[in-house]
Length: 192
Length: 67
Image (cartoon, rainbow over all chains, first blue to last red; front, side):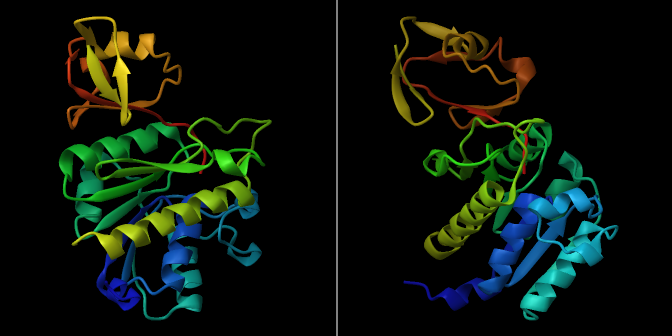
């Protein structure tokens, strides 16, 4: 049985630093992950604060800069490598090449599809933990994790965001932390 | 024929079926799908020409926006 301290030499990629990515990264930082490679092109806006791990005084900052600061305020021992960039199939394979596990933490379904297909076809040794279906509120027990070989998907797989079904801290946070929990299980149980 | 669809055994009343037909038959209504056939990722443009046969393993996943 591995001890938890073994994760201090593991690297996890966080693709997208919104509701899923910021909360998942913070959970992994708190438990002592060795290195996080975080990527996002966006800046913090006021509307993000209903679910994302940022603060009022960070509105307008690049998400990767703000997230790195927040991680360092929690745990100085985590190495954070940040990329303020829009991810594409070409740069995904470069940026996340040293990761044991990649967390899909995008907002848009076409970006989710892009990174899942890229990792499954071009990075077959990597584990990928994705999130799909977490809009709205309630219905705790619909949220689950599916596993297909090295792909894991957390969420209810059906509830898509819309005007009447916004992404909100409780359900997005549940899925983000399920992703972190799945990453931890992979790191503790697979021979990586 | 018998296939495995999303980790579950599934009887399909055909000798073979394309990925496009399987998507229609099983009513995967969301447009953003990730498809794997016997471990290989299948791109959308290949849904018509990828043929599923007895014993094959297929994964069809909906991806919905939000995060």
